[in-house]
Length: 63
Image 1 (tube, rainbow, N blue to C red):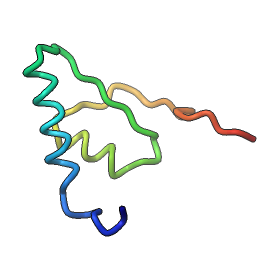
Image 2 (image 1 turned 45 degrees about the horizontal axis):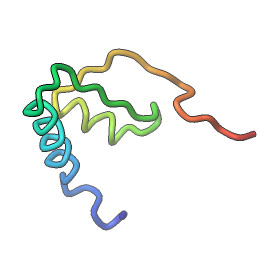
Image 3 (image 1 turned 180 degrees about the vertical axis):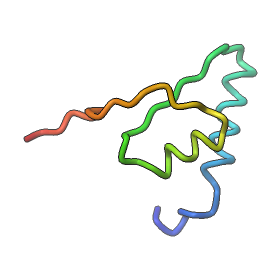
Image 4 (image 1 turned 90 degrees about the vertical axis):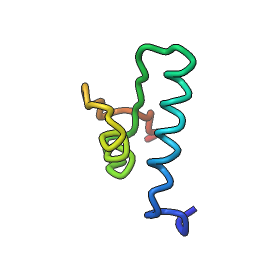
């Protein structure tokens, strides 16, 4: 919802989800987003994720 953007909620949600997976014993957590989704990519970086590659056809686009 647009009215909820820009409040930093994603940082708390991403931290909680990552922590939950780590507490469950996962050694590695991988996340992905479309290369054009800069806000989400930035949230991953703020959470400590590192960029390992880029896939420019993340979604199948009907022509």
